Every structure is written in structure tokens, then in C-alpha cells.
Image (cartoon, rainbow, N blue to C red; front, side, top):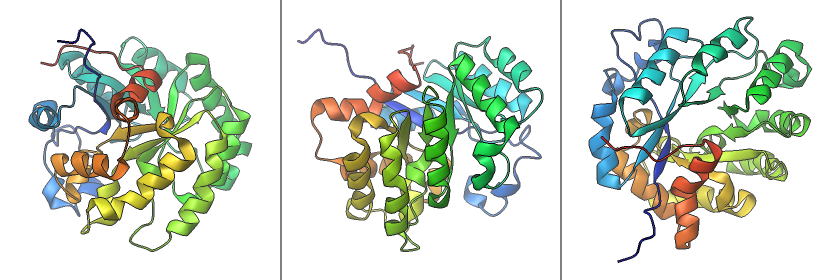
Length: 288
């Protein structure tokens, strides 16, 4: 028997909400009745176990809610299979530093997901945005961005101006597969690979291809990302429970894994856990 420790499998993108405290942030759920209910860590754990997933990262599901950010940090402290939290804040808010100070009291706080204020072509000129980005860099926090292909050139400029800022492009950069615009997505995404501080979250592809969630349908996106960014700059994530609109947790895991193959054992370990442990600094914890 080998003494080599098991490689961590880490889901880098999941959401939790309790409708009792999610009021005011749940408008987007009204048109999706199948997920308009509570989703909490114990609901997820059996699906993680079925796929061999050890740890997971909470990503904000209500931008700019201090109370919910604190609640997600509490969930991480309570459940050993939650390894990190990405909070929601506006880079331009006056009390950003105070919020980050409070979150920093938790060892599970690793970064922020947001969109800079205003149209993307003004992001690099906004002094308040710049102040917020410098606050993230000062604290060595990562920045998750959920952006479409038309904003990629500006993301590249942000990365060039702030080479020490760790930037994550969520959900494969929202590939417009059903719209038939993957060529535009490819053309705008490829230049981002020149910036070593940008990584891509290999997540949520079922939402962009449903109802065809086959490996063959997902493979062109996966192959392009691996070709341009390399396996070491991709982070697997589920986007559960939103991804349930495209398929089950198990379907999402196995289909996205299949679309990325063939990989060596080392590449597979990096894509599905090692990169997250390095980039988000997710540590092995108890699983219960």
C-alpha cells in the first residue's frame, strides 16, 4: 500500500442560500422554480461523496450583503468540507476596508467576487475601482470576475496593470455556445492567456449547452481552455445548485471530467484540486 496522501478533489464554485434570510436577493430565483428553495451544506454533502469531492469553496450568491458574507463564513467554520469563502463586495464602496477587516478574522476568507462599477470600457479609469483593487492586492485576496467575451480585453488590461492581483474568470468566460458565437469567445479569451495572473474557472458548462450536455458537446470548450491556458491555470467548479438547471451534480462532474480527458494523473489532480489548493489556498480539513 502506498503512503502517498490522497490528492484533494476541490469544488471551487458553489452557492448556499436559506430563503428565510435571502429575501431581497432572490429576485433572480423567481423564474427558476426548480431551485427556488433552500440549499445548505448537508444537501450537497451526499453528492460530493458520490463524486469523491473532498472540499468546496463558497462563492457569494448576493452581491454586497455583509450579513450573508458573514453567514457563508460561519458555514465554512461549521462544516469541515467547506474550505474557503469568496465574499461579495463592491470594489468602489466606501466601507470596503472595514468589511474586509471583519472577514479577515476568518481563516476561510480568500477573496472577493464582484464586477467593477459601470461599463467595462471605463473600469481601468475609475479611481474608486483602482482603490478597491489595491485593497485586494494589499491583503493578497483573489478577484473572481463573471464577465462575457466583450469585457475580456478590459480584463486583460486590468491584469497587466496589476500583475500581483490573482484574477479568476468564472464559468469558462460564459461561452456563448447555444448562440453560436464561440469564435468571438475564443478570439477575445485567447489573449488573456498572456497574463500569468489570470486563471479560468472550468465550471458550469452544462448551463451553456443544455439540453445537449454530452461530453462531445462540451469538449471543444475544454480543449480550447487547456490549449491556451494549460491545465495548471484551470480550476474545476460545479456552480451547484445553479448548475442543476442543466443537470445533476454527478452529471456535471463526470461530463466536465470526461470533456477534459485525456489527462495524465498529475494533470487531473491539478485541474480537480491541486490548482485550487494553491490558488485559493484551500487546506485539507475534516470531512464531516
